[in-house]
Image (tube, rainbow, N blue to C red):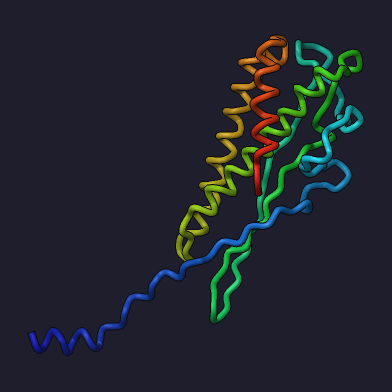
Length: 191
């Protein structure tokens, strides 16, 4: 036993994982093209002039909203704290979003706005999961992208559920229920 104790003194200690404290910031800047990007704001709903893409005249869709969310991250170290600083954004792509000229109604615009709202709510869910995660210098490179991928998949599932339930807005009674559900969620949402 005595020899084992002496040997233990000469074995270097394993380096502990360094815990990274997440700081999260909402941003309206990214590498997306400035001229074709609208960043989400509760105070700035979509308008028809935001839809600049060429409409697909064949098919049932009256309009298409291309929206989503993204993030950037950086590690900052100091003697007091090690931080992973994450900037998140939710965007609408003006050049890929479109509307058929004869379908520019308030009803259709509301349907499309809810797609953007769903992207925003998915962004906030991603932020919530980031805040709940214990990041270290060893796991953040895999955990953060995994949380993002999970968030994007959840957003797509909700977008699909919305379009399936409302039949792309063709079911007015169900559309009203979705309007209430998403409007309430956005109103109560906090970053």
